[in-house]
Length: 119
Image (cartoon, rainbow, N blue to C red; front, side, top):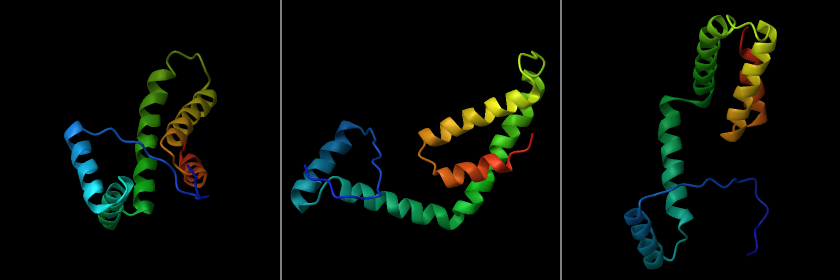
């Protein structure tokens, strides 16, 4: 299989057998690849969703989510005193970074979010 050079990334998805069956039949009938209708549906979803929740606002919401998690964690976890608050904050940010990288968040957005978190 010859792959053209692209910046696109693969995203896998599980779906019920009857959806996959329909998708297979549809692609046979239309001559399209399975990726084409899925990509179209996803692009339409992103377009519609981002009208109400633009990326900038989404980033702000993620920052608020992580800040709330940190604020709740630091008081509870600090009671164990296994780490200093500074060490625990670094550990928390490293955990967030791993999660965001696993979710394919760009390095630029990752840095922006981590820089905005307050200890």
